[in-house]
Image 1 (cartoon, rainbow, N blue to C red):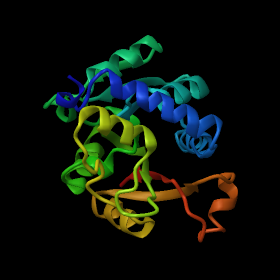
Image 2: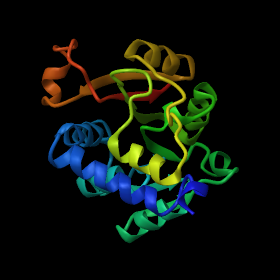
Image 3: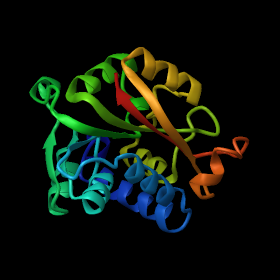
Length: 220
């Protein structure tokens, strides 16, 4: 039953639906995708990992834009199957994943994952370990209006599971995340807030509410 399966075939379908709304109607998903692609620019022979890829939307955009060797990774086998149907190489994350890909990737994308992990500092150290020296890390985190603010598709998912929980264990401001990135071996290079306006405006209109923050970093 759905309520017994926090990561099942139903969740990726809901997320694809919500992404369609954010991208085609509300627009901030479009600006988020464009910012990720912009920050992930590098040599065409680069090895790229989308860690926490879900159904592979960011991996697909980056692959189409630059022709990289792109791989997705996620804990949900159903999401990995969806990635493969899109032509994206993908793996289910296992216990030895970080060791398997030590110093392997030129670019790592991590979108809306950090707020879910138990230990953000340890997680970022492990991500850094998979990057080559000087590699690029593109991280996306939500910028919630209130603590625990979640989306309609997630609410529907909780209702069907008969289990309600806040999926976000942490909340980060820009300054807090910059500090954490510096502490764990990354140098932030650029950033953009994503909302209903084009990204070139959002750095200057900082009082506007934003859905997400996209940061480009390099490994120290």
